[in-house]
Length: 483
Image (cartoon, rainbow, N blue to C red; front, side, top):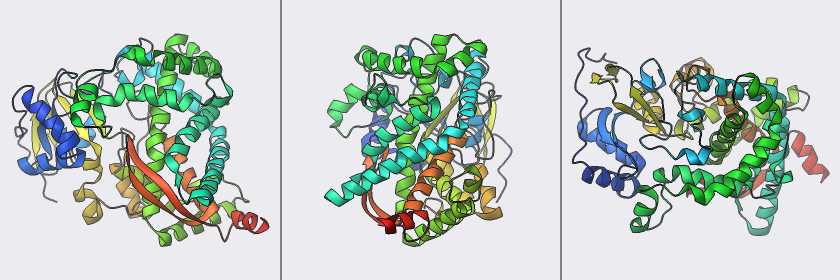
């Protein structure tokens, strides 16, 4: 690979006319080209993977839509370096939802690591995850074995089963159970939690989504002005009430870290509902769709590995058994590489910077907004070769495969690095990978293979089971024979 010229160049690209060009670009992003093509076409037009572009939502919601986009695996990691970029109020990018949606507080995702509260909140989250580590595997298996039993019942009745609908309800229950030992459905929320959570999520993310409505409706309704927070205030209060009661141990611990209890509760709600639940709504259908598309021969390999490791562990799914499942880990990492739950990352240059792509070095001025569209970066053919845009389930197996993990960025950091109070990497990074692996394990302890139809929905992939073949070996096979 030729080394780039060390003489910094001007970043190519154009922002066009104020307002007019930003609105035109927004229409390209949502309707005329779609996300992937929007970025790929501009890389092609300017012959550079570092390029000046406008990003949505633009007028009249975002003060300034202009960014320097870093769209290859070499340039993207500058966004992780908090010595070079500031992360204050940039979680959702060029716009920021009203703090009325988070109890009047700027929650951790919007804080720069230099702000004192950032370390306290992140430590609260690390402490919570550590204190509940033994609950994750049994809670997941309980809730998701029940989900798959429902899938089988629905397949028997109608020949299809909507995974997303079941996952939305199951993931909410699982998170409440795993994090706090309190089922949301057993609280005053009842079964309304997922609906309230989804509504609250949309109020924050609507500038970045399309509902499939005519653009004459969507543009003014979703992409030009913020939806009024008071329309979801009752939903948010109900969620807050659950957290304030269910998370007493975590909130007690937060106070010992010097956090105000109310601020801690709003942060815990955001981390649990937006980051964790919002993540699982996207993550698990994404993994399922990729594994479904990988076909029966790949399913056989997964089943053999999973059942062998579980048998060696005395028939139990343990952390030690999961660590032995190299192909299963690779299958999940590959899904995260292709379909990161959070596609957009941002950072504002703290000083004048030189940013290096594969082919050149570019000069960026202090105060400029940097932006990364992760699917461009993690599907970089200069790193992942001719199959960069394809799902290769065993890509990360073995010594050579493990070398590629440094280019998996879904957690707002390299997969080979760890979250800390001083960076912006996802505090639940290891839990997310664990949950993804547990879904694959649950599937292939139960089934030899399965088929599913795949489409798209609001926040990601939509998956509908069409058939499952019950396990013919392993512990589930014995159970199937007994029934």
